[in-house]
Length: 138
Image (cartoon, rainbow, N blue to C red; front, side, top):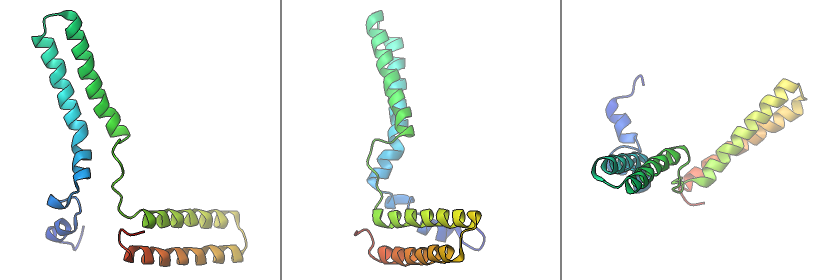
């Protein structure tokens, strides 16, 4: 980050301080909390329970809670907090156009096709500017 002071980076960091959304806070803490709860349940069952059947059942429940945390990390259950889905869609469209342009260049298609793709990419960038001006409204 040459030329950028740490203060500017912290000011513009959307993950910093109170600017983090409640969904992001839940998403970031759900898996570790589930793991800690699972560990505590397993530990408590192993140490404090007398009956073997109950102990095994509680240990299994604790392991399942820990497993839920692992699965959560792999595939979040909470909804996406994306606020600009239309803009994201247009970025995906631009990436698709870049792939088409690359394929056209590799395949050696005519200049007209390359120019058509370049014009479509310019239109896509213009659309991104329009969508970004709208903010979170689609």
